[in-house]
Length: 221
Ligand code: B12
Image (cartoon, rainbow, N blue to C red; front, side, top):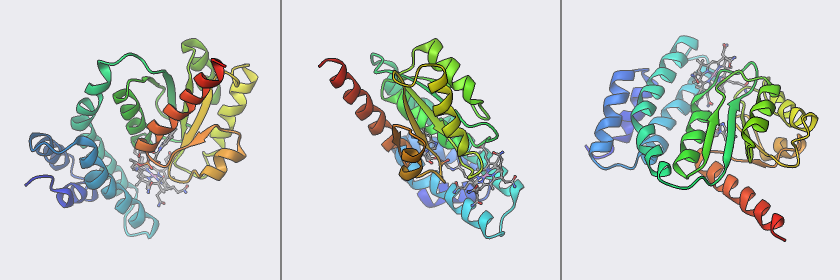
């Protein structure tokens, strides 16, 4: 069936990687845009899992199985998403990672994939990344943007630590910091002195474009 979003959602909820990967392949063959398969099929499955976990109807092993299923689907869809960006000139360099103590990687990786698809050069530091590591990589690559993901209320503070590490490294004026992750809000971003917040990967791309356009406009005055 063309874009069986309900089955995609269910495959994540069930923690079934084979079925998730095969539904992702079928979607591509049927001409479903990969982002649509993620947004309408697979990602809502992750949200269901989060809700059930919060209500104690699902437990950590279930959440882990669902994450594996999500990764299986993403490994089919990501190359398709990225392909568009590779032919383009680099629109800017982004250093990306998840804060210290936090191992949630799916959302951060999706943000990186969509930025790559839009012509940005993305260096993904992975998960559980120390604030100094963000600063060191930003210096090394002369990054335009540093993106920091946090999925836990306890690791959100790590985003503030990255802003501070960039300040200490004397890089704060040349690098824009963006933050995101389920518990993160625009208000939190303002509070910690970040330059921007985006609620999902699509708006992260718009945010990065806006921040860089604004900067180049100021630079050329
Ligand atoms: C999958 C999952 C896991 C997996 C992660 C596997 C992996 N490889 O990533 C595992 C099982 C390991 C896990 C572990 C834990 N988890 Co967990 N997990 C989730 C779950 C169900 C889904 C997260 C996800 O992948 N979502 C799908 C992606 C696509 O969405 P996303 O991450 O939100 O990302 C999007 C946006 O937020 C945004 N974004 C994300 N990052 C960034 C960065 C930037 C710069 C920008 C601009 C935007 C942006 O764009 C993304 C794409 O659209 C959430 C529930 C939820 N609703 O979030 C709980 C959840 C985050 N986990 C939770 C908890 C409690 C834990 C544990 C502490 C459980 C435990 N007792 O051990 C551990 C912590 C481990 C650790 N130290 O990090 C809680 C957090 C509660 C809180 N407020 O602090 C949640 C909310 C579940 C719940 N309802 O209770 N988890």
